[in-house]
Length: 272
Ligand code: KIV
Image (cartoon, rainbow, N blue to C red):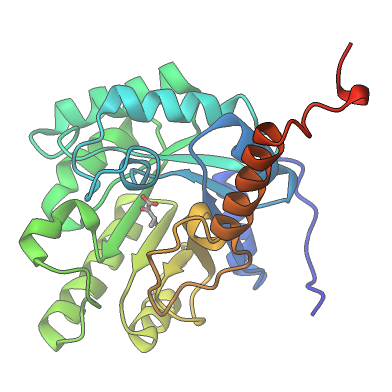
């Protein structure tokens, strides 16, 4: 299906609000390095998230907790060197903003200054309000993240769907209102019932970007390596795989090994 799209030379936080106003869905994907970010940006993805999922995808940790601020800055600066169009949002990693608002601001400033990113993302609602306000007061755009917030995995205990019960759903709705009022430019809603996500999207004027939150929101985000089928052991219901790169890459690399062993590579044409 072809989609009516306004041409944006460069995506800004204002473009995203504009897209919501005009009913154009927002596309967002993760990237953590120069080569992948160049492809993602070239394919006209609106927002690139340098997610702390780099902790899982790039470093092989079980959770997002171990990744450090320095490591996030390294990933973000590699991504920034690749992009021409996308808005680049960087996760503040676990431990870099929860202890006090001054530290939160210092962390956000380091990301902006040392990587050249355009915005930061923080997990949580009212409980981190002072940190969010301080970062916003410094002129740094903030994206919120509610629902399943992986930095709190040890509090939740599992990665199952959040906010199925009324009490948690009400808190999530209040938090979304709070984040809009505070001045956040968008909110990620992760793994919550589609009906609740749609209700939240209709109740605020800032874009709601979902992952496992249904089709009634203003945009979608996925982890790039999941979409490409590189993380083949991970298959939640919300994930649509567009490729099976794990198998394709394994086959290509096995073929290379065979060609080296059989002396087929390099051929006469592949040498000097
Ligand atoms: O770190 C990440 O990749 C994220 C997305 C799943 C939204 O926060």
